[in-house]
Image 1 (cartoon, rainbow, N blue to C red):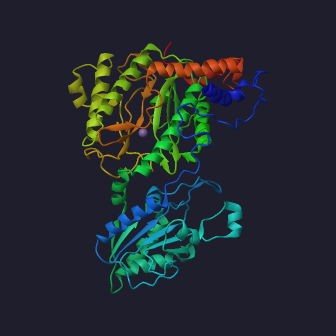
Image 2 (tube, rainbow, N blue to C red; image 1 turned 90 degrees about the vertical axis):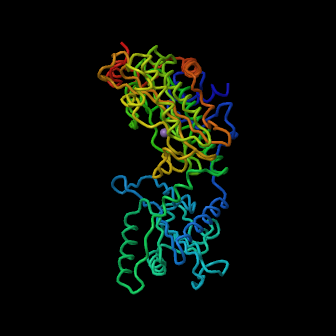
Image 3 (cartoon, helix red, strand yellow; image 1 turned 90 degrees about the horizontal axis):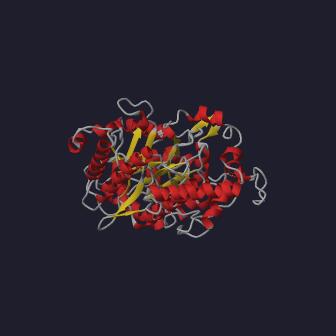
Length: 529
Ligand SMILES: [Mn+2]
């Protein structure tokens, strides 16, 4: 019943004709009721954040690491810059992940300076009166600007809440960076995105070359951070669990809201409504909601087409919670029934995912996970007549690559493709690593040498796993993968939709969706006649 409620509320604007729903036509929907398996209570996970101690531990490890470069080592980390979208409109701001990992500080224009081992430097501004090891330079409090842009954290809270020994304002950025570089024999730089800042640091380092002390050696500090980011602490795993649980609710909401002919954007909105309602402040990456053949476009995210009556919908969507993101994909028939060809492909992908999951254990590797899923995909494609030959040989030659062009796994954490600069392939898996397992088969319209009955089918199944002491835990296991279970979920939703709306999708769709001709032209060619 709870589940029904969630659907009815989501579907309310489309059910405006119904007398028994008592919602005015076009009414916005303000309440989302999570399903029974939701573990965090009705209040959701709003405001979830790692404890300050987590950041203190990371910084202690970072200071120890940079000290290995010898005395006179200074580290400077820089926040992500703001990005313009159009005119004077900015893109939504999201802090750089390495900067987040080190500082937890969420605002732009921030610089962190780490100076271990300089006893001669006086501790100006340090609350303890000791020399500052960790300086955080942040935007100043500014009543006028804060009235336009919202509250700023400011240097005092940078010390109190973010653990800095010294808080300064951006007015002093260049001066303090210059000072730190002038003392440095080695400069460890953590700057992923701010080109202007990088150029300023370059300029200062070049100027030092002319001085009698000479310029410091510059070391990229990011690879060490990425290595650390690959293995998650218990608190990080709990945060990822929250992100995954919110994501599961979004997928369930989308499945239950599904009906043939719906616009991809509606599926996206149903999902993201659940994300926001449960406390995810933003997406981990743009949602992919591809109907029919658009499921074969790996990074499709325009999500604006109407679907056809027999279309599968591939949804790859992840909520971000406490800066950590989930990354989950399900593929389902909007009608509630797989066609025989869709089901055949789906079952191959599911089997491949299970084979891959079996390889997830301490001491295993991405490569083993990839090989297992590729072999199962190949076996399935041979069984269905889509490839010919010996599966083991074909897999060795990567003949599956036409149908399955991406890898099975990537790390997951602060970034959806986490720690992507590290070479994952042969690295031994250890407890605390979190990654995706996501085989897929994609058969675009008109694919050469393939019976047209398969055209336009794209299936991916993606779950998020954490390596444990003895194997793995599938964090997204609560979201059904079994094709029968998926069908009944979608049908349960469509049934409630029809009951609640009194009218089927034909009459409840407005602007375009209800017009069968329009739907045919925008949905593209149905993959089954
Ligand atoms: Mn993924």
